[in-house]
Image 1 (cartoon, rainbow, N blue to C red):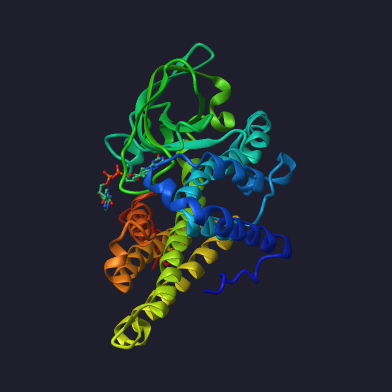
Image 2 (cartoon, rainbow, N blue to C red):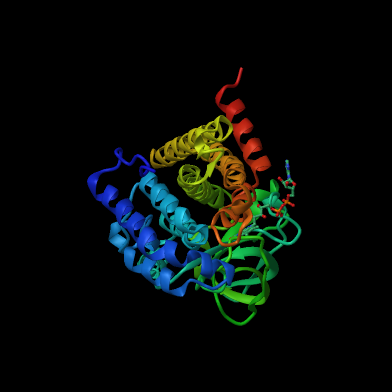
Length: 388
Ligand SMILES: Cc1cc2nc3c(=O)[nH]c(=O)nc-3n(C[C@H](O)[C@H](O)[C@H](O)COP(=O)(O)OP(=O)(O)OC[C@H]3O[C@@H](n4cnc5c(N)ncnc54)[C@H](O)[C@@H]3O)c2cc1C
């Protein structure tokens, strides 16, 4: 199938996307299935992603990144996810933290973290979710209490992707548990590994294999005052909501990538497989299914690219990011299930990739805020922008 339309990108950005696409074809597709089935950390591929500059895409050039447009970032994400969604996951949270530090960090935090994050030498993760819930972030209980010249951090975070590989973790925590509204008591600490911080458990998963998703325990962890993002208490909730706009575009792009993989494999199979004397795409039921799949993938990419472009205007774009994430992930769920139908019994085989796409798809529905939460974000914004 033709590569996605990247004509709106400038020539340099087009080249970046094309280089990643070629790398995925040559280096990822031949090994992804085996790595995934054995749940093996893709150290070599991640090393190559560092060489390709993937971890510095959203980091400004003055800090050693490439500072590409968000549409370019989204299309690179799509290419990675087309090969193996876990690779796109390995740079997702990292990129959100890079955006947080770029936009809200102090000069010192930018100088400390961004150059090393741009090369991927330092990886980053984000820790929002807690065992009692991820949707209601204002109810988090991880507490950063004043201690010495900084903070004592206590609490448990769960479902934290890249937690073992990451050297810096943006932890959403409460510096003022009594604040009203609760959001004003929330801050972000840039935590590094040290005494009182344990990666306590790797969580078993349906898909999204190869990269680790963990439980973290902070028990008397001492963070210096300089770890407070932007040096500002009570700003963490708003900072994270801004970061999540990029995160949701990234998850939408991952969904487009996985859905495109399912579509491309299905288009090929429908021409090779024959029943009743003809390739199965000629049976109207199969052909129309493929037409619907392709239309949905195209629409999901358009919404995602549009949301990515909206982010670059600097205006609040949680409406656009929410719509893209909602539509693209539901599309991915549908298209990966349809790919199983197109492949018949082989769709269920672990010797093909279709079953992996089908196992990876639900993550995009749940992660970075469930789709129920996206709908709530969307309707709040719609009413806000269309008040009577
Ligand atoms: C593989 C994986 C990787 C992840 N990686 C990370 C990570 O790196 N960092 C991180 O911080 N988190 C991560 N998460 C966590 C993810 O963001 C949360 O799972 C998600 O936000 C939902 O939170 P929850 O699981 O606690 O569900 P809950 O908040 O308990 O929600 C349960 C159900 O109730 C619904 N619901 C809840 N509140 C409402 C409401 N107000 N209106 C309508 N419906 C509602 C939800 O939509 C959902 O269907 C990851 C999750 C997974 C599965």
